[in-house]
Image (cartoon, rainbow, N blue to C red; front, side, top):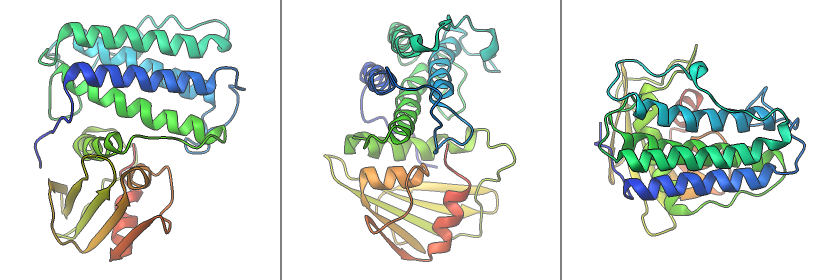
Length: 257
């Protein structure tokens, strides 16, 4: 597996996650929070906002708990949820600021339980950026708003996704596996184009950064590719797919967070 790569320092990731929370809060402020979210089946906007706010609080709690062997139980947290759902956007924005401030205070090297390869606070700063970004996109799509995403942030999101997939809970879903088949991803746009090669193994997958030839290749604008890999958009003519297309379908079927 490739070593985790951080495009920005810890404090900047914390600032980015607050910024994404603000965009989400603004999008849902005044909206009908009973609106269903098509990209998160069974969720309403209210449930989505609560989920993101709880994730923010949980991330900080896992840093506060230090080098624990098990995660903090989210149900144990004092979340301060508003009695009136109309207060959820403000609650979300305020909670993001508190959690980001704590992560900054703790510093990037503070020990923490994580579900990724980096057992430090820096994991949570980056994770909350992309957790918030993806659900901000979910909310905007539900409201008929065209999401705007910085391409460099999209590149970082693809890289982070490959890093955290093995540690996430997938319920009954089985992570993709195979016998050496490879998927090459190549993005354009922004200041930092990205290239990754994923190789399926009997036990799951490995991945590296950089140019390589794969059985399948997915190439296109960084934002479009990021949305596809997170199953927030279908594969369309906006991107190019070369080679064994069923391999891409197999990958997508088991990997979106």
